Structures are given as C-alpha cells and as structure tokens.
Amino acid sequence: MEFKVDPNAADVKKSLSEGKKYRIIYDRAACIGAAACVAVFDKRWEMASDNKANLKGGVEISKDTSERSSDVPPKPSFGDIWQLDIDDIEYEDLKTSGDVCPVNVIHLFKLETGEKII
Ligand code: SF4
Image 1 (cartoon, rainbow, N blue to C red):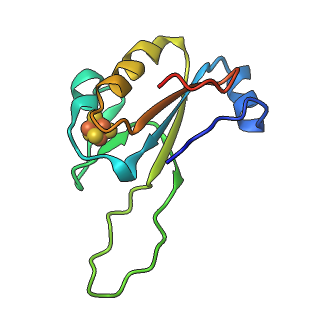
Image 2: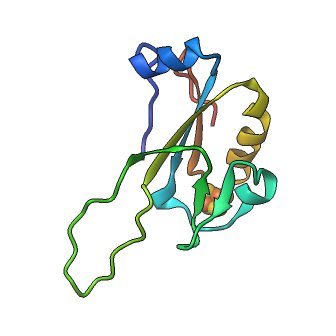
C-alpha cells in the first residue's frame, strides 16, 4: 500500500507546532509477526494476541470493516493502519525498527516536507 504525508495538512501543521518532526505510518494488516521491531524498540512495539505488533501510543487510522459470513471468525479489533508523530528523541530507534522489519510495513516520513525516509 502506498502512503503519503501532506505537509500542508492541518494535523501535520499541528504536530509541527508541538515539536514533532516525523510520522510513523504502520501497515499493521501486512505485519507477519516477526517481532524484529519489538526486539529493537520495545518502548513503542509490543506483540498482540493476534501475533502482530502493536504500535504503543499510535492512533488507529483505519479499521477493517469488510463484511464476512458468519462462519468466518472475526478479526481481533485492532486497526489495520496506525499512525504516530514523533520528535527527534525517538527518531533513531523508530527508524531502526522500520529498517529491521522484514516486510517493510513500518513507514517513516519527514513532516516538514512529506519526504519518505523509509
Ligand atoms: S518487524 Fe515488521 S513484521 Fe515483524 S512484528 Fe514488527 S511490524 Fe510486524
């Protein structure tokens, strides 16, 4: 899935005014549960009951609302896409989390320009 950050969006401007500099967008639906992110930065990542990682403090910005027949068990109620704006202090650890993810589902953007870092 392709993700973008619009530096002119109101929520981006608000985060910039609060001293945040980067945005993590985490495609939880595509996580394979390798737990590499948890190993490098357990302050922000933890494994959940469905064997995918949760981004601690992140906001769920997309939920799976697709309909299923009653014989298909419902998914756990975790959002599919999570987002978190961060400052310089956590940048290196969260970038490393994204670098070690084997399926590249942790994306990192610079808020000021919208540039995609990973
Ligand atoms: S490293 Fe990637 S695939 Fe593994 S748990 Fe973290 S987000 Fe999921």
